[in-house]
Image (cartoon, rainbow, N blue to C red; front, top):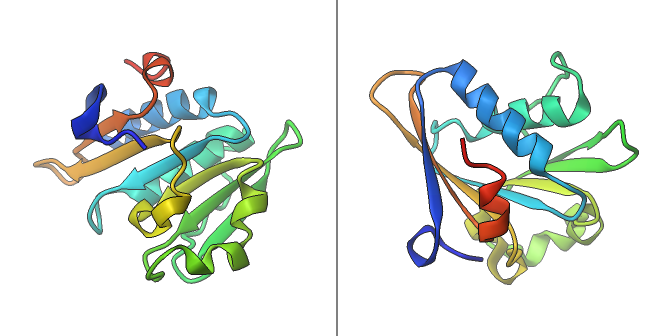
Length: 158
């Protein structure tokens, strides 16, 4: 995986929930089966809110119930194109050993969104899009730094 300090990045200042939803719309339109979106950042940075917005866009349903997978560890969603998206929260895992039991290999055929991707270890996809969120000054403000394959980043630039 290309880390932000090893290659091109895009940083976006998100002033509001509407800005976050616009970024989610760009991400959703760029994601394809086999893609991984890795959501990094401290507790409360907005990873789950961004994942929820992306999943609603992918599903074409702005009211889709998207609970946090904090306790279930993974939530799966059928998409209108017949594919699937899987939202993982790996906070409670110590490493990649438990991922196989959570259907990681099968999930990789669809789209995966992963919170706390540092727990992936060697299973971290080399071609993933990483999105690091950091809180801004206001309650809804965030800084989003995207990294990944340069050709993918070009499609996500504002």
